[in-house]
Length: 336
Length: 116
Image (cartoon, rainbow over all chains, first blue to last red; front, top):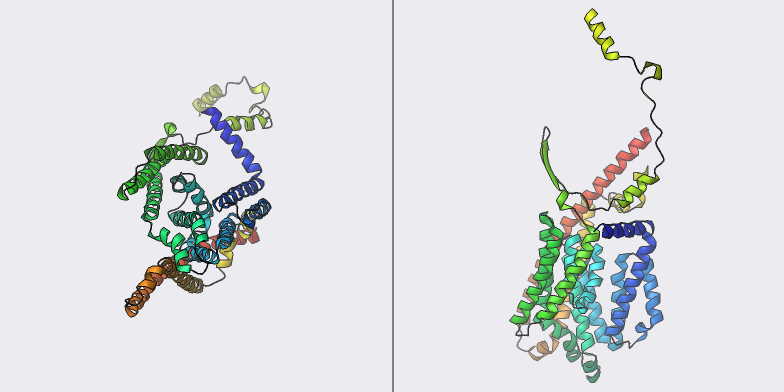
């Protein structure tokens, strides 16, 4: 455990020294990953799937703040949709505008949750983002997760209907739009998934806020299990087969990743927790102190680098060191 | 001095800009903005639901009571608007109060700096 703590502190120290460059690099990698994922979903069939265009967009995204990432990813997805058909592009544009006007304008700081929810759903880890947001963010973050889920399902519906859309005439807008939008709107699985993600977030957030010992880790586990439970319940309600293996694997991976993130974000040492209370004129104070888990190696190294403190000068000169001051004081008091 | 620089050029710089408005003006501006965004959002939602069910609507357009649908839509829109305006008003008031706290701290530090 000490080794892990030392590795963590080294990573934190490195990040603290190179924060601005590290953030730019992380944004570049994240945007590259997202845009390549989009290109793969749309089967690499347009100018937007060109690697140079993607690299250029990722470089631009690295220079912009995190809030601009959903805008870039949204523009790319609309561009991809326009290559399928004008109606698809317009529908996606209207969808994004609606989601922004109704929900996303209240959560501008949850851009990361918004852009990471679709890839997490695509990778079969639906509980990952709600659990991580439950550990760190506020209740309003659920809006970003729900919007990410809706956008993912519409994109999935669109990319799954590419062959069918190619067969329909270009002017038959009702049939074309029903194919990729109507199916999604009528799909109860989408509603069940949104409910499962919301439940995972609420459980994780609620447990985190209780302040019990190991609340974060308990929240990660119960949040993941809650999501899996709701999804399996949904499969049962819709008459679909259970996917217990996939659910358990998803729970395990979510707990591993969530636990790792929790180790970096918040690692209290509950074994050394102390409680005490005191009061002043106005209040009673009940304080519970939980020290952070640290390796203390960095503190020892910092202490070793401190300049040597010179020895303090003796209070008495050397020739007076043997004088019995107590005896002399007693004599003076007797005389008085 | 450091704290003054942090407030005036960091994340809290927005708080100083907000405090240039009066509280009521700031809330009203946000309510007006929210009105337009909610209307656009509601129109977008209505459009998406219509487009997604366009075939069914086109098939049954002759039997639909458009007046009744219009009334229901207007009531739903009014409900939407009320909810969103209340939320936006509450958030705008909260942001303004937080900005005011930052601005008071900024002015206090300025006074300390000018006195020292």
